[in-house]
Length: 121
Ligand SMILES: [Zn+2]
Image 1 (cartoon, helix red, strand yellow):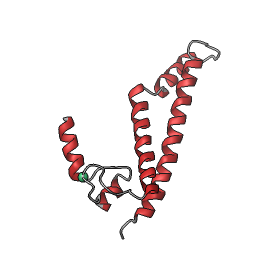
Image 2 (cartoon, helix red, strand yellow):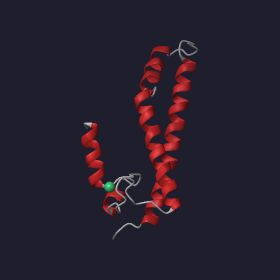
Image 3 (cartoon, rainbow, N blue to C red):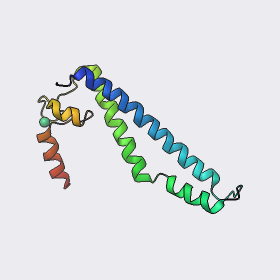
């Protein structure tokens, strides 16, 4: 059974929710990490410090989640504008299997490969 673009729209909305929650959680975690840093109001300071350290989100992870969320939002916008599923580079229809795998992609496989190659990835 083939996934329709309408179904992918629901997937995108779910993804957007997931990533928004993830981002909020990260912001909260970092805010908490800063708040509890050095205040020492518990008896398990060392454990807490380790926990905070583990949970603190580093800038690159934070940035990649933000970027992903923007890609998802862009895809939602394109869907609402009726241009979802068209490659933004060459204008060809993006393969539905590719959209199933990466619902927020804005490039067809060929353009994505060319771009990655050029970017040296
Ligand atoms: Zn293309």
